[in-house]
Amino acid sequence: MARYTGPVCRLCRTEQTKLCLKGERCKSDKCPINKKRAAPGKDPKGRTGKRSEYGLQLREKQKIKRMYGVQEKQFHLTFEHALRMPGVTGENLIRLLESRLDNIVYRMHIGSCRNQARQIVLHRHVMVNGRIVNIPSFQVKPGDVIEVKERSKKLAVIQDSLKEVSKSGTAPWITLDEDAVKGTFVQYPRREEVTDLADVKEQLVVELYSK
Image (cartoon, rainbow, N blue to C red):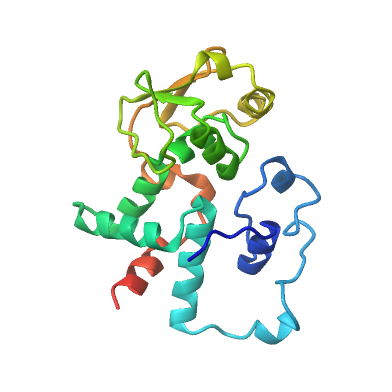
């Protein structure tokens, strides 16, 4: 499937939930979910009937995939990886998505949203353990040190994003030195710690791919 290049707020309206795709806009009154705007398309009320079991599973998969900005093939490969890991497959899936480098950069507030964090990684502004890594899907391991390279620390886009640290702090599985723009991935998060996914039912994705 090709990369989606349309208006991202339309995706939130489709899923009827906040996917946090536009940084500050998602927290403002401009967010279409705050405005309670209907789903896109003609006659959205005609499509609000009871969904089938498959429909519920598909929507949950699309919600998670869009939230993390992962394309279909990559998402399926991540699921296959989670399936081979010991433990609960759904929780493993969230753990793998959370330990992607672009997501870690977002959690450290180096980027205001995952799309911006992905661009920062692609443009070679981020180092892992002292080496530049420009692969957004790179799997960060506990103990890895993530930092912005010296010449990029004063970039306006990064400094503006870091202002969020004082408002909401960082994830409990990450430590951050805000002045040095440097942090450590301490451990894989427990499922209950990922509070912004409280409404996500990853087990439905497992059921979908198990058919």
